[in-house]
Length: 328
Image 1 (cartoon, helix red, strand yellow):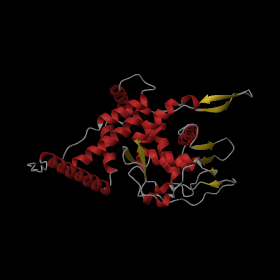
Image 2 (cartoon, rainbow, N blue to C red):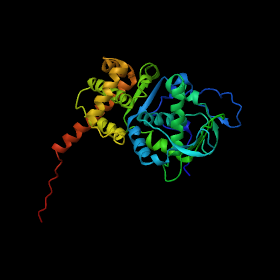
Image 3 (cartoon, rainbow, N blue to C red):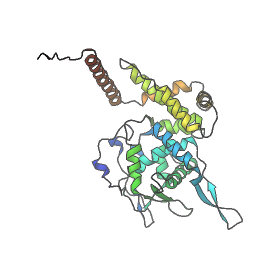
Image 4 (cartoon, rainbow, N blue to C red):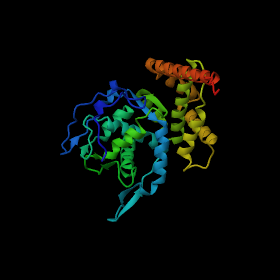
């Protein structure tokens, strides 16, 4: 069993997570169920949503290796026979699964081995800024997927029950937080921060078109880093290659097309859904989402890297030779 540490004693949250200021929690919701209600952050406290781009590629690999397990019981009309129905998963789900894990682990009363009652509508409101039949369906589907995946051997990280006519319930296994710590609480992944106003007014239009949704997030990432690099001097790394690799991993199972064609089709969809000036809109939204603190942090981090590399080069060019008298 994994020993669980208190969420309140963790180190400061990385850029991957919501800020501490966004960790306010709503009071217990009214419920007639016997299970305790899982107390999630207030919808008003999550002003932005952070999408982990590298986690999306990681969970895509896990899901594609276990698609045969992703089924739910289905009762055919006019028949008492129960069959298994495959869960239809899109690339957008890969991103939202990471968001869901982040949200659930920030619950005020999070604990393993305990049944909790949850509200699908409440989760939709926190993530999207609104709830609809479509957002609720996505949330419920991704909770089912998370409960079916064998992340650590045959052990599931959580269980979920969402039967019609019953309050949805969830129980976390000890591996749930371990998975969260290993693959989401990390500064080595690439992230994009999207304001919920942008999710509601822009991204909601493209969620149903996976290539467009993926390209929106990847373009946002590249434009964010490009803007930050323009504030500093020195070498600028190539981030396009890593972005292309993520796109390939997300779509390689469902498409035989090249990365360039996937990107082109995604951008064409963005043009149709958002408008001819979609690139300008994405760039403006990306830059506006960068806080002054994030700009300062990026500048200081790059400055420290430049100073360290300069010192290493100087040391390499000027070795400290010691003359030894070996005369007998």
